[in-house]
Length: 138
Image (tube, rainbow, N blue to C red):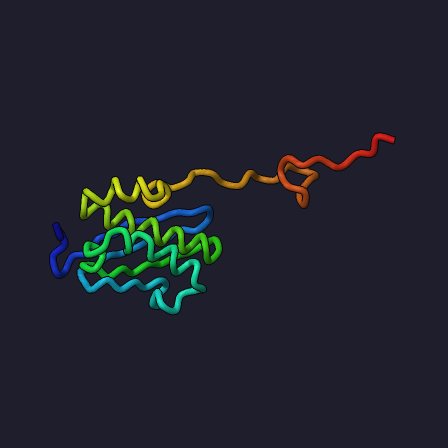
């Protein structure tokens, strides 16, 4: 069910907290590059395993593409989760049976989590948005 021609590429975005990843897929052999770095040398093992999840679930469908991701913002784990989401969106777009598999495994593979940190309120910049100053009762 490969819809890409030799010259065309597919594009999706993934989000996690402050991290955003723009992922391009081109016909290939299943390689993944994040910020021009191969997946094998990207960060530590846990973020690499996060990115591998949609590729493992997709199986042979994932080996039809090479993925090129540009991740910005957030930290390493947030960027890895954003890349993971972008890859999963591309795979689900090209193989309709994968959408249900991804949603059953982990909803965040296809749907971004909209929660964000609350802005700090005046006078409590170090304590956070809701925490009050501790008071003594005696």
